[in-house]
Length: 82
Image (cartoon, rainbow, N blue to C red; front, side):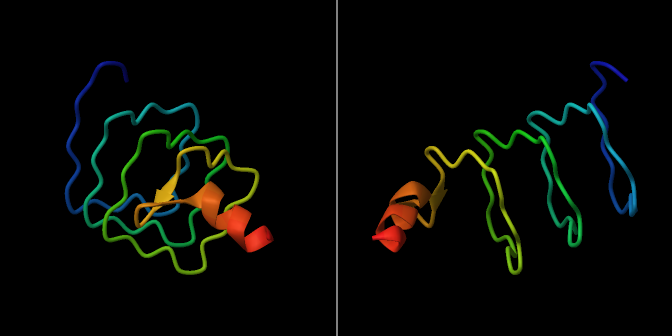
C-alpha cells in the first residue's frame, strides 16, 4: 500500500504485527496500545497528550530534546544521577 490515505474507526487490530510500515503524520485518538512492544521505532517529533505511561519501560533510547511536562528528560536524568 503506497500513498494511500486510510481511515480506521471502531476497528480492532488486536495482536496485529507491523513491519517496515510508514505511519508518518498519522493521528491516533482513543487508541489502546497496552501490552504492545516497539523496537527500532522513530517517534522523533511526535507529540503525546493525555497518555497513560504507567509501567512503561524505555531502554536504549535517544532522549535528546525529549520533554516531559516541559522539562528536558536529559536534565532530569543528570540531576537524578548527581
